[in-house]
Length: 216
Image 1 (cartoon, rainbow, N blue to C red):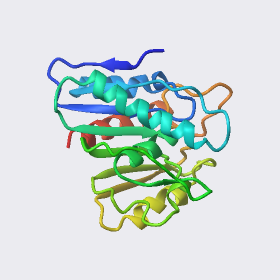
Image 2: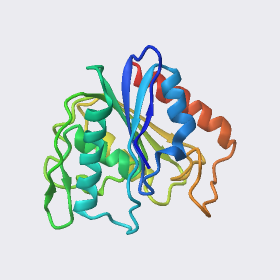
Image 3: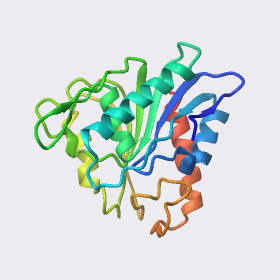
Image 4: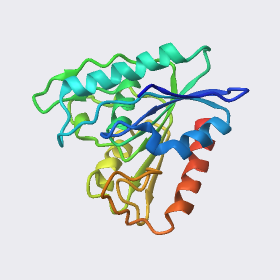
């Protein structure tokens, strides 16, 4: 699968999208189409699926490098970049924005900072990788942060850790009532039942809010 690239006629911003553990950005295609229609050049590389509950440092570094490579190869301008990611993809974007990702061993994954990132949209990011010293201290850009009330993979309290820790940051934190971990995906993974009521209405509102923030 090639990098998904959506180009508007008059681009105003670049949206770098990072999928979750499944690695398929096309499961978020309506959201990505909305971003393109709003004026974002969308760059969304695919990844190999992560099969273990906790990804390895090599898997995380490979994805981080792939995101930067896709941005370099697909962007033809110096437009500002918004990073948008779901689950572990959102975690990696925080790393690209300057956060330190710690493995349980205490090793820091050597993610290269991407200085073109100007804001972030983080959908249910796991935060266990940010428990080491000063892990989030270098992140200094606005963040729209989302959690699902019924998420049993990344609990709202885990997502809220970012808001609690980054007291200096401009963070718009939202907990979506009735939402699970996969409610933020337009196409659900196989055999997943979404607890979210009014799913299509929520996804339309999500796209609108994300687009507005991305272009702010």
